[in-house]
Length: 636
Image (cartoon, rainbow, N blue to C red; front, side, top):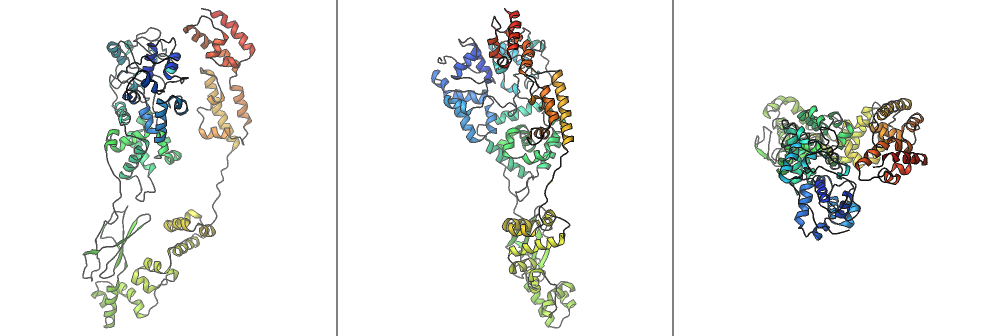
């Protein structure tokens, strides 16, 4: 294969496929495939997506490395694909675009169009075609026109077309082997005469600007995008303060409400599917960004207004410290430090909310407050114990001969509270607490502190679970027991699962009964409708079983393909409906004739047909004889 002696200079916003086609037009090779083979220096891919073997351009034409970098960055869709793959895969792809030996092993054979939002047919703006021909004396494919969500040119408002408005013939051939070079379709109609500019859709223009921002941001990566997305999700309040739960369903519902059902459906997004259970589970997972990039672009716009604002922002996410950093108030009215911030220690516990416990070092009073996500209020608290100062004063006044009411007045309290704290001193048996916790210790320290001082946490959690099991008493299972105290249940499952499995009731078996007859009837009905549609409007390719299952729900499809399930009625229907090689060879013959009449060949031979239509290699001898007889009628 000869050296590359020329490579066209790219035009503004030109698609790489168009550049390769212009290379063919100015090359000495008679066919597009030969020129592509020379450019790639190996067997070229069926569909041109990315450059390969760029090192040949560097060596043969002595162009700079910046030229090939601009070729990738400004004229291919790789900058968008780069955001959807890992850093390791990105490095492998870049190596494949430069290195001949690595290309076939690393680069995909064709672009994942659905994944990166590129329309499967090459499209043109009639107004751009007219302007480009006046300016450059040729027509080229614009990269920005190829996104699926665009229906019109973002500059002129003209409807984007991929077939001639007059005769409906495709403007390009599959594989980009033929493209427009002037204003006329292959049948000679001037496509610029049918241009009907409309008002430019601002939503489409904004979405294009967002995708352009992603493609132009050179340092962006999947890891960076995911990290910034999780930070802003937390900053907007969609992550639980513990960090172990994301309010995905609420976020998706807010997203649907923000954009509206009609707008999402125009983009091919079905709102009902977004809030299905499997979609909610996969949402906001790093691997899910690759297959649903459009949803995440809309999410970014919902959070930041635009992708550019999102990428430029340095927003951080952190929950405020519950109850602040102190110091905190003493609430004991008889303390010399009353209503002063003299408490410098706070014990925080996290369960369904945050609880803070505060102890005054001057009087010993201990009280608790609820915090995040509840609104914090210093005037809302629960007293665990009045502390040593209160108890000592109460005992002193009691020994001085005061009655309970007089003591209560002295200590700015009430008779019930004084009676409670005087019980140990008066020798009265008070409430019996679980776990051999002494009543005097409860009065002195509060119940939780007293229990913790006697029983380790493991024993305390076990007592709680046993109490919950007794409370449920066969009327519920593990979920009901867990609701009794979720924090202790989860803690004990983590630290002593063997004990839990020994004492908890057995897990319920999930038994799912499927009515096979009803399921088979449902699949049969759907398949029959699909087969009738296919038969009434047959495709250009061979009719196979996979075509019938294209619109069948995935759960029914997996049910059919389950080898343990026998569905003879459906299998018989499919076997009768698929197209044999002989049937397809007869049906496709008009397409062969149509292709032959447009080709440069003069004789329609069997070997020529087999080269371009492989079905004629597989068909029977009778059909091959029939083909030769029919082909003799079409000599040029």
